[in-house]
Length: 381
Image (cartoon, rainbow, N blue to C red; front, side, top):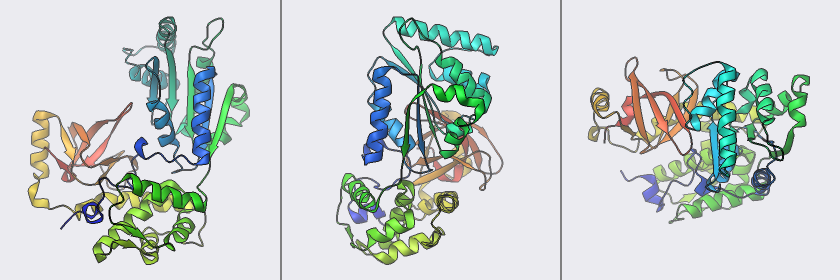
């Protein structure tokens, strides 16, 4: 059976969920956020905060920003920051390739301070970017404020960017963090797309993927907006499932009923117009997403899970062989998803777990993530 991307004549998957800066859509809100981050860099202010609901494109915006950084900028990108102050310092130092080898908080602080002073003497700037910052404990956020105090006579030694959900804004408004809030000079919010932006976003991603021979019924866009509420991640999920549904029917046109079925399959209803409901359904969908890709691949051409693990123990390298694969906190199918891998992503196997589960490490552009994956969906070549 031909892959549905080939069926529609795409060169790439237009609605992949994993952040890809080449698909960055410059809506008015995203343009404002990107400009705010550029302003932070140019003016050397201390703190920037980007707030947005889940799926509105915070991570993609900052990755686009990172790609534009000049060569004299060094940065640490922290992804899962439910960390104590010591753990955060260690994570920052590790991402900046500074050997910490444990130690007290004061020692870690001193190592980072010395690095910042040396970098400034070389004409380099240093950024710390923290995603999902609403998960940072109060005491860790307070330590970030102290870090931001590091400066020479006329300039800051460190600039910090916090990305987070609305809970981060609530946390920053607490009396315990009033001094930190006073140091935030750049504050921007990402909003959902309008109906017009939803259509423009959809057409932009299809165009980037090669357009091919796909047609979209004009009535699709209104339904797409009503179900997704203009949340980019939900738009991607609905459109990808609609493409799959059309492919199964042998239709090269996305029709309104494809959107209806896709929304129903992940539990979205127009009358349930709340972000929390949408996000809960999105999470449920991501849990089952890995199995969908298996439909398009023949199982017989891949090694068994046992052989994959045996080969991985020798080479320490395996690859994702399905379109999307969830990396989880624990070796169970109901464990929270920490990252969504895509086909071809290389993984380093760290250890075997129960049944066919393995603990793996994935290195992306500027970040590293570890989690449990099912070796049934991995290949040794």
